[in-house]
Image 1 (cartoon, rainbow, N blue to C red):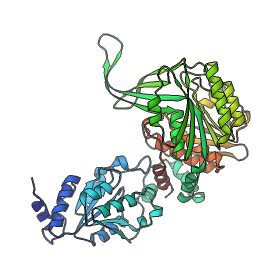
Image 2: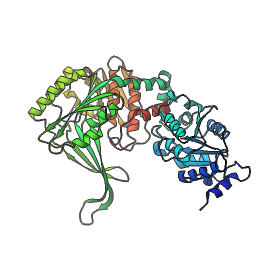
Image 3: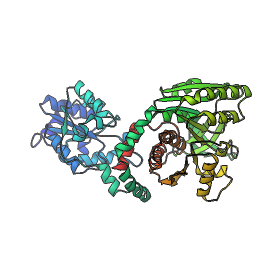
Image 4: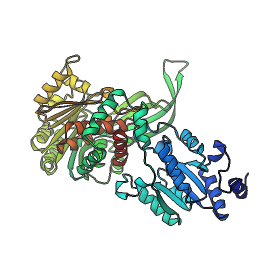
Amino acid sequence: MSTVADLENKVNSNSGTSAPSSSVESKIRNLDDLAEIIRGLKENGKTVVHCHGVFDLIHMGHVRHFEAAKRQGDVLVVTVTKDEYVNKGPGRPVFNQRLRAEALASLQVIDYVAINEWPTAAPTIRKLRPNYFVKGSEYADRKSDLTGHISEEEQAALEVETRLHFTDEITLSSTKLLNSYFDVLSEEAEDYLRTFRQAFSTDKVIQALRALGSKRVLVVGDTIIDEYHFCDVLGKSSKAHTLNARFQRSESHAGGSLAVANQVASFCDKVHLVTCVGDEDTWHRFITTSLKPNISTKLFVRPDAPTVVKRRFTDVHRLTSLFELTFLNERPLPEKTESQFGAYLERVAEDYDLVIVADFGHGLLGRRSIDTLQKHAPILAVNVQTNSANMGYNPVTKYNRADYVCVHENELRFANHDQFGLLKDLVEQTAKALNAGTLTITQASEGSTIFQPKRGYVHTPIFSTRVVDPLGAGDAFLAVTAPCVAADYPAELIGFIGNCVGGLKVASLGNREVVEPVPLFKFITTLLK
């Protein structure tokens, strides 16, 4: 094994401050080795400079930045963000972490490269303890930093006596270059974005999302616990026509109205959830620990049913569903519970700016509660879903008033008993039947279409390039666009925000994660550069 002195001698060969070797591979180190190397360099009087970033596409702006950074010392080390922490939206990074590290190591100005282990550079600074940590001039203004990471990095630098330095070189954008010259998005999406950018800047969209914080939102709907039992498929049994699989692990997610409430609470400060659990197995502790802290709850208990659980047996390698087992009683609430539920909604509905109904058709929302919400909600947003347990029995047309309706195209067709008719006709007759001021049709790979009787149609293409799991994408779309409708944002902005949320949502499994503001802001920034 090489000693610190051996490693330091490599760095000092030739001119005294050159790279350890011209070999790309020799420059790429793990963080533990790099920390040891830096310690030896500093003991021998060398000044070590550290840069950090994604560096998805190396350009002259990066080269100038690295050259300016190197002028602050003798040895330049660069760390790159791991693929899993690159929050720039679907399809990014274009180049994986190993390729990005190799591209950096091929630059003569850089002495060492490492792939970071954490989402931010702050722990890395504490581990490496360089003399200087260098960022580009665009990070000097803390107010423009969407993530808040520069403040964390500055604090880490202070702790280990590392000086923070900003370069002032030419500023270019990897994202803009990738958007312009790489087929990250479809041609339709690129054409759409060219037009959208003329009307809406990144700052304007982000400000609109931040303004949603003041909205007081009531969420009403079915509780669903999504269980995933991951299996390794072995094949067909030798003695029966049965698929055999080896159990690997399991996890549970807060689904249904819980997922909607969590998603709303990422953007609105005050959220109240009204839902129902079963007396047989309440999952009460799981529910309360799975909800965001700014969500208050009113949990009703029905005595004749379990909490709804959807248990999915899933191929651990492909994340495809093998079989689903559902625990539920989809009959209407018992009369006493229904009466208490309706009375509570009548008492609290008018206290909120917006009421979002996530109706999965599992017995929670009966005629009385629907009538109460239609009468007392200041602004009513409704999503009604068709699933295997309620096929044909849970149409959106059971409502006769909704200010905002958000449904999948298939659910709209079910509600109108029309499989092949013109979508335009179905949209307009449904909007009229529900007195809806805004109706959104989500259309999977076709994007989304918004109809407003007074303004017409707006279509938005998808912005996702990789789909891990579409489950929960419609709920996330509803949760973020409903406050936008309540704020009377333009349909173009609502559709763009909704599809950005959907694009991020389908990149993760089910309701394992909600779309948080910072990743969404970064994705929006990526699209609009």
